[in-house]
Length: 431
Image (cartoon, rainbow, N blue to C red; front, side, top):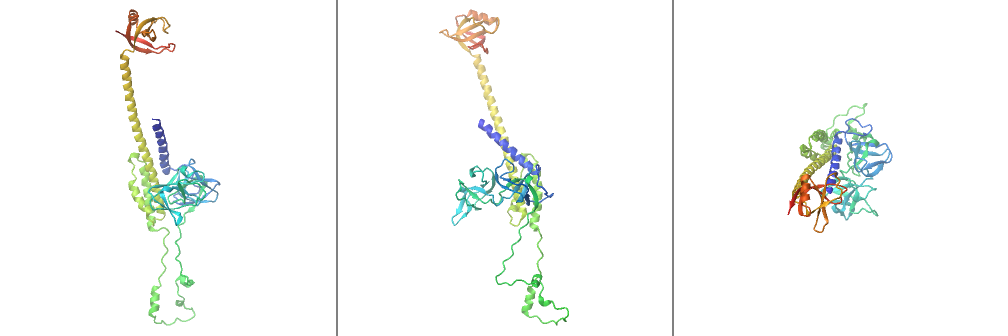
């Protein structure tokens, strides 16, 4: 029972933490990142404004720290919740994964392949042992690749030290950050030029042939018939393609869908826990999160999926608490039933003769003025109990039964001065 109550207390604490986390996502509180524009789009870059600022494994000062940052350092913020910024791990950060679920490539010992599904990845820290790392960052599945970090001479136990994989995040207090700008999209790589290719002239870069521009002071030359080769070359000259828009249409469409789903998820959270259902939102978000052409929308979708995971976990804890309460109520009913049975058993026992023995007079002080007391002894003369008549009639009967063997019924009387049990006799059974 004691263990069960401890478990209930722990589940209650976890439930409060997760529900608080869910509410905090929609109702920000605490310090905010300085200079952050209204309606800012995640992710964005923030600059650190303090020295020796902890980067922690979770949102809150109770989580262990995984390193420090200083003034001027830059971090990438993917979400801000109740005064804490969720950031991408820095180059010096790392994670832990259990060795039982990773197969290392003998030809490349820095590459490992995950051999199980839902394998947990834990936030790493130089200040806590791998086995005691309690902050889970993400889960990996069979076939995914992890990059191992050299740990020569270090004791890592049953865990590999790895570069933090996609989906792993850390946290830093928003109090020590200021907005530095949006994340710049990666520029597409320029195609490699052949080694023997000549550098383009200015005219070629502008798409103008030097032969088609005649000096202004010279008369225009008569048109000459073009050869088949020159006609074909002319046909190959194409105008430059217009520059691509800053946001691809597919990414823009996905971003709009994510914003709508974010509002719908927030509305779903306001329903009673037993009525919340996020399955339809998850089905819409997974394809966007896995689409390689989704761009920033993929990150947005993953953040919403992570948010759904936390809400569903909180709902699961609440359901567990409800089941625990029902189980406790059932146990209480069983205890009450057992107590009633015990009371009934005691009542039946009281109705039987409490004691049997020989009645004798007693001259010891009874604690009640004017009340006479008798003794009930065994055959050897040892006192079994004191008898206190319940009334004058009972006192007369005990007087008549002196030296006789009887059975008595009545109520046990509490008297701190008495060293032997006292019975207020209400019934006498003669043999």
